[in-house]
Length: 352
Ligand SMILES: [Zn+2]
Ligand SMILES: [Zn+2]
Image (cartoon, rainbow, N blue to C red; front, side, top):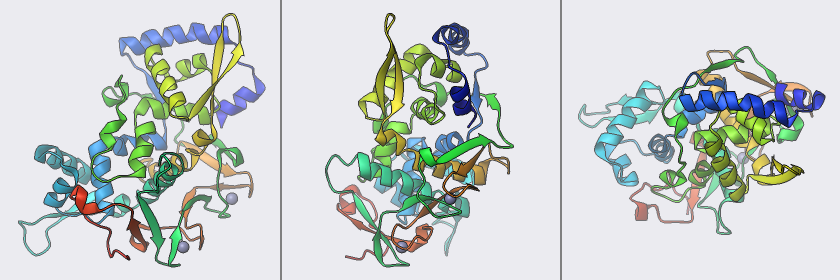
């Protein structure tokens, strides 16, 4: 992890960072070539942080396949649904099939689409742990292989131990570097998490309300890179100060960061990940795995080493009971809500 290594050997001084940041800020405000880290998590989030795309994929995991069923479950306008299904098919997350009659087309998840399941589960576990507001989680997972209620963990693919940010290290991979930032959603100034909350209650939606906004995600990611200080984050992300202030305030309010003063006159603060913030590590590296596998053309930007076993690893989402990696087809659900109240399908083969 280059940034942390730097932090360990060199104490960043506030002043030069602030100077550099002014130039960067002008650049950001002028909308000229801002450059972003190559990042497999960002590539994954680019897809699932489109709220409609995310909701459609989520319904597909519940077994929804037809245009009308997606429409009923999400109350989504026809034109929007047509557009998103077309895009998700182009991205090869869905494939279109016409079983029996060509008139009744269905959308099925591809292997690449199904492989998003562990990322959804990792986000769901995070939402269950931190964002359920003291209420029971919307659904319980049942792992068919071991017939147990399962609370999957994000584990090392090599030794199977649970992973945390503290027991992993990063280094640049063959795809490391930067690319010109795309305009558009990346530069959205307001972050409105409520766009994820259509349809059924969902811990994944709650998690995306916090990190599904591109800037919020990137600020949290800097936390994992060890960049704690406002000026340093500003320089690294080439972000406009008002957006950074807004996102840091939101992330403090939602409990992802806490603020600590490290200097007075002038007062300066750093932003540290809370336990809840640290717990985003699992979802992050699970999405990283998906992006590496499907979108990095064989060149992952980051390589991860597990300090406990000393091996390079990728994230594996495993059943906490039988320790086996979970796959969508091997899970059933018990719901704490009535899916029909949301016009949605129940879980496949409800075991009640
Ligand atoms: Zn390991
Ligand atoms: Zn199991």
